[in-house]
Image (tube, rainbow, N blue to C red; front, side, top):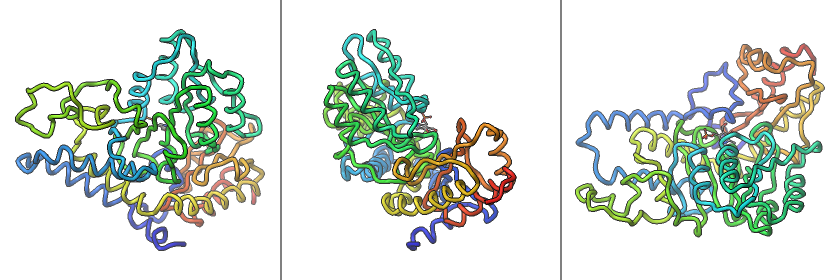
Length: 390
Ligand SMILES: Cc1ncc(COP(=O)(O)O)c(C=O)c1O
């Protein structure tokens, strides 16, 4: 195991008797992020120490870290800071203009923040939501491509993530992007369940918009996220009109010299009070730690853990998707109807093992601070909870 992962657990407040395989629910805030957040909060008790630069410099550092993780190093102009994925999706939806009757395409059981705003957009234009049915063979890419082929230019926007939030089922976004652009539609990608845990490359995927939140795989606080907009999508209308996104915001004395001009690029879409003095430093510390592991190395590290969980689950007679159809860091273990799914997560938590149950799947998340020993503890706890031996 590379040194970074051998030491990673020490960066978090994870007691020895806690096996935390639940980053898809909420990533733990690392100790340096807790410290940075406390310091930021305390700073506010001495407001005379807050300078004009504090409204922009840390926020731009955060933009830089997100841009690097998105495979667009230096593209600070592409990033807006948002409080949530839903805020980013609403901003994108406010700036996409569908033709009458066009469809917004989503996946069955996609996360609600990626559905509601698209549905409203389509309805506003006399269109509808089109839901790609969950494929029986687990191949979402083939299912999505088949629907795009059938629907053609009736499609106005496609909302798709790199992997499904419920069970980690993988979607080949480069193939989906080619098909989406071929029918003249826009591509909106939610990386909330993958950025930081695996590489992303905006140049290869060519999305119109990308959304994320820091509180999962970026090990940041709740209520900090981002929107990345493609270069031709950076001139739109924000959903709120605060002073910090305007061109003169660096001059606190001149704010009443109202200006129609914005800060460069996607900064115009920033949430109001973007320079949150406690959350921004905490988000930066968390994202920098995750970035320091390297997304490709983290994916390889996580793959070894999810593979051990998958093998153990199969020994217990449970089903998982084949390796080529699932993300390295997120695994759904399908439960047969005889198992009381709702009772299972608490039964595992009683044994110190934390995962989520979503629908009929136990969702297991592996990040840089997890180890293959965690996989062994989960399989053992499953064996006890289900009364089955491996
Ligand atoms: C795929 C996905 N997107 C977004 C979110 C969070 O959305 P929001 O930031 O709008 O609360 C989650 C939370 O579980 C998620 O799984």
